[in-house]
Image (tube, rainbow, N blue to C red; front, side, top):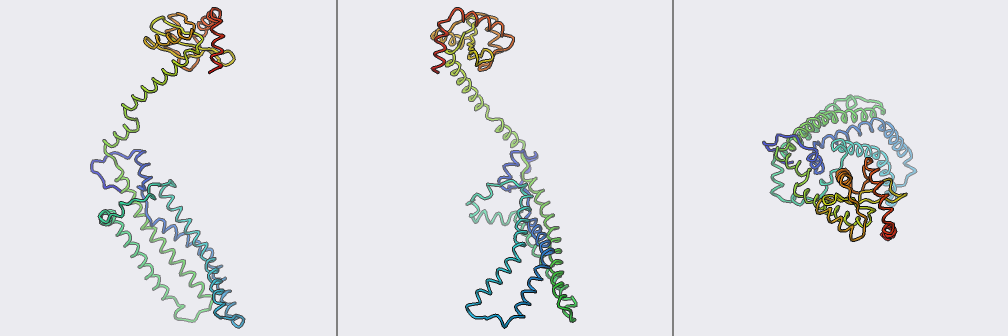
Length: 364
């Protein structure tokens, strides 16, 4: 993680948090996965060790009670080794599956079950001995070293204390029934796992809280970084201006291409021009194909004249269509009556044009 900047006083943005998470920059402590694995192993032992001990006892008793039936030669040894391996594998499989699942859950809880794709990408800079030396002797490296030493110390202390307690058991000084040996091993194993899990759990909690605080501090942003990120999210004004200009050009090009398909062009006559189309059985109301002001209005009228599109001068209707009409959408309801009268007029006076228009629309 990056070293903390004293000028970073702002909370990280959602984008900064998301990007950092992809890079693996979130609070996590490897000891949590160890603790989850120990807990899983504890419960597997708690519920299966009695059955497994019984299986081992029966197997050993069967072997010892029938030694005369077994022929130990070089050719039979692989068979017995395979048999022992399969029995051991069957006993260890529940432990392996439980601890693996527990570790995956622990890792997922720390990463909020989100992927961190950039973590698995190869980073060749890690092969640089200089940067590696800096990582080892950085503040984070020193903290990790002390955490690792703490883990070693805890394990060593627990093993030492466990061994002393085990050696103090009466089983080593007085005769005991054979079944007492099994219960002694069972109780000693569970006790050791419980103590180890409890101690590692405390260490994991402390380490995770430290990592949580450190991550929050490392991800703090300066005011300038927040401004820059907001500017990037909103987009470069110059780029947005260019995009709007391009959109206008494309719209104008499309409008000019649609003018020859219009039923009528309503004009101001010089300042506004609006081209309309209406196809019975297809359009619920007349559609605005194109609209323009001043030079664009003249261009619409010029294209209309080239294709003999009927033109009707109606100043108030032209102004209203230009102001309230939207290209590609039906005209406002308030203009239905006025446009119906205009279309009725052109349908009566330009029948030949509409015969051509129908053919033109079919060809397009």
